[in-house]
Image 1 (tube, rainbow over the protein chains, first blue to last red):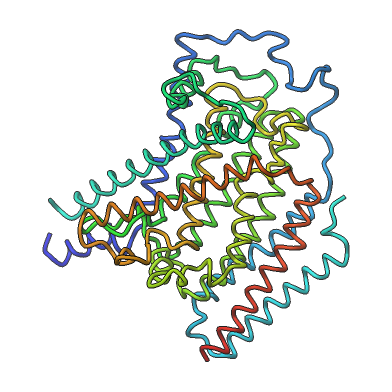
Image 2 (cartoon, each protein chain N blue to C red):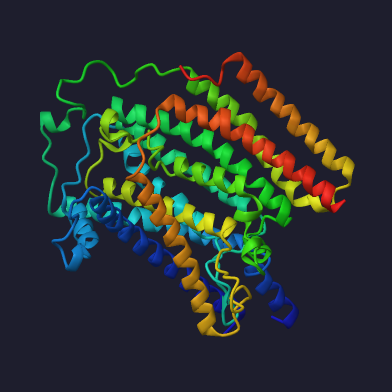
Length: 136
Length: 343
């Protein structure tokens, strides 16, 4: 490998490409999280085999015997919040590049972005007025 | 040594050190939490294992391993096993991009200096909800299910407030890279972003409590009504992983808060806000960062024992009808002020 290629390789590995490190780190974090589970699993295989029983296997609830299914109905409000979340999270993603580019933007660009923000504020105001944001 | 092997060795050392320090902090955060709560409630707290109960975390870890690794009959097995692992991972990944010091020799004290910085953090933080929701779903019983549902709604609500609260910070800094955020905060203590965007700081702080499921926003757990919430069907090491995951998330969030608003590893005295020239200064800056982070973490623990829990409707109300409009107004006002001042 000549010097130019070596320098290229170095930049690929360090300065210009820290994402390789992130991949390495994800692998590290996975190993870190799965090792205790694996050790516990081996330990329980070798030294403490599970001893299930009717009461032990029962669903964890207080005092009384559990009635009905775990598939209970939950409030539709949760669903509405999820939809609202989608809109605003996408907005936040658009706002970050805007914030970075702000220093170099002409006044017109800044105003256009403000109009975009106000459009979403209008969405929030609409939902508010409709009572979507009121819990229960 | 070739540049690559040098790079690989230093990266591996950095990753191992950061993991080790984080896990040490997590273990002793539990100890501090128990001691602080005991002091507040006029009890002794752990004091049997070692001096001042200092070996309690080790004893707890051994106990968690030796308990029966019990899987209830009614759970969804694969998800039941996956959830505790998934809870741990996001907080470990968030710590990767936080600069915990300037440099030692020529090595920058950050695992991965991403130029998209905070965008990556928010992507990873969003993954945090999966562990808890999956645990609630896998348990296949009512309390965990309710805990998981509540948690997902809470996390996504406050994620928006959190994401929007930091935008004024980046309007000022002009870049998403966290090293850039820190170098912006050098010079004087009043350059710290807590003084430049106080409203951002307040919203971020509150959202941080909600995102890490800490009191006053620990609705997913709420012991008195859900008996512990999403993790009640778990035992032994799997339960311990949820516990560690919570404290790892608090540690990561504290580190983020320190980096964004409290100047990171810098102190505006004695030239400590410039990249270190010697090893000693480099280590001192790492210690400064750790000290700031531990102060924030201590505050998080302290608040848990001082505040009552919010009701769920109050929680959603605060998130959607107070903080999101406030954060939006904060963005608009900051942008307008910057426009008038700069242009």
